[in-house]
Image 1 (cartoon, rainbow, N blue to C red):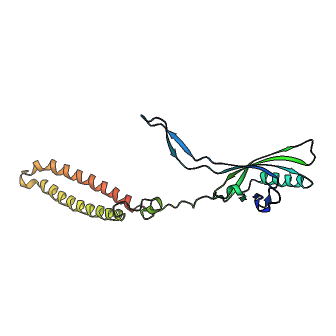
Image 2: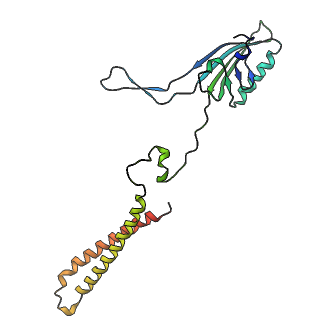
Image 3: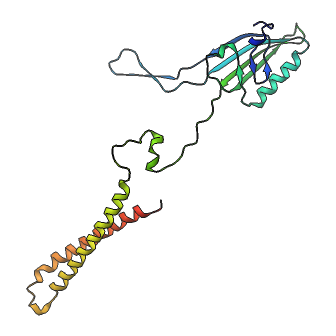
Length: 222
């Protein structure tokens, strides 16, 4: 890469990478091989591409080489996100990168000369934080149209209250029948009803308790 072409000099943050000899772009498409019975070969399922990788090699030389080397070493040691611009990334939506590795080799036979290699990896911004919502927030998960009214929870709560009231009325009738069956002055001709009435009363108590638990679940703040 020519030093005379100022617009072609790669920029890493505010660092001008001059005397670059090679820039390599690597991209893993993020495919996973899936074996399918009866299929010759493997199905390639994409689960999402990996980050773009850039590998830069170059040479630092001259009176300013030591200062340039120090600048690159500090940038690599800081580990902060940096912008990157070069001709090879023109077609990439590359926002920020991090320096994943840095290597420098001093040339003993040539004073103030260093060969270097910089590894860059794309560091995309995080997505917006997830929001925990009720049924009204199903659109955020692509589940907005479920084919039924999501207000059904309120309707179920009202229905549970109505059924509980009906059970209370039925238990009142059973209590009356129990009292009638206990009338000894009638000669005990209602005695055969004692056991069925008791069983029905017990069943009603169990049902009423279950509906109470259900109503409590709907009314709980959790």
